[in-house]
Picture 1 (tube, rainbow, N blue to C red):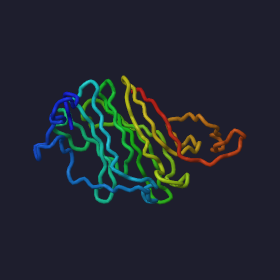
Picture 2: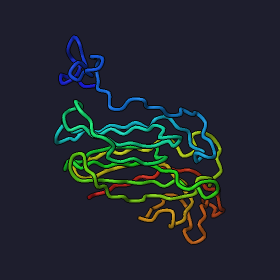
Picture 3: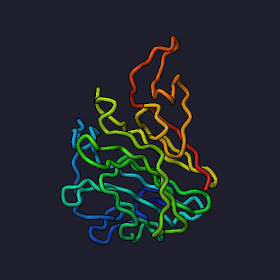
Picture 4: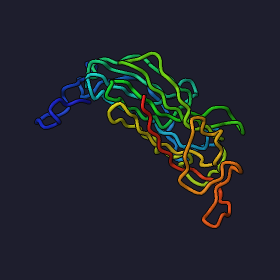
Length: 232
């Protein structure tokens, strides 16, 4: 949906209509189906599912818009990223697809370069892992995206205590040319889980891979929020 007058008129959101039904907005994809689960399943990394939609506009050119959504491709929950370069009138095909990608966040920096944050379940059974990716590309509707792994940890450690397991809290924004993001992941202090580095603001020991309280006693690992900044 779009309103070029800030929704101030008598009939707001009429600047972008779909020709199939003349209703506000534009249909980007049809036949979209996805599970909506309040409680996560072990085979889905213990995480609840629900569509994972995100949208971002190029701050330097409002005609360029990026959209992410999830649906079932066969039986596999799949993240899609698409782009419009004409204010939503027409949309590209998939720029990216990510099997079992969730928690998508899109942002476009001042250079017009899109960034994408998401978390992906890889492997299966006891070998399943949650991997957090940040990807970026140059220009509108790009075909080639960089890939930076921010975290990579087992999908069953720590043990699930409640829903959501991993959290629905991933978010990405931009300021100038910089990207800023947050995501949730296991706080087990193992540097191998953070291939591009990490700084903890709680008591920890990277050698013994343990968390500690103020008395120095070990405490169980859990899911924590993490923050990052990236300058291209």
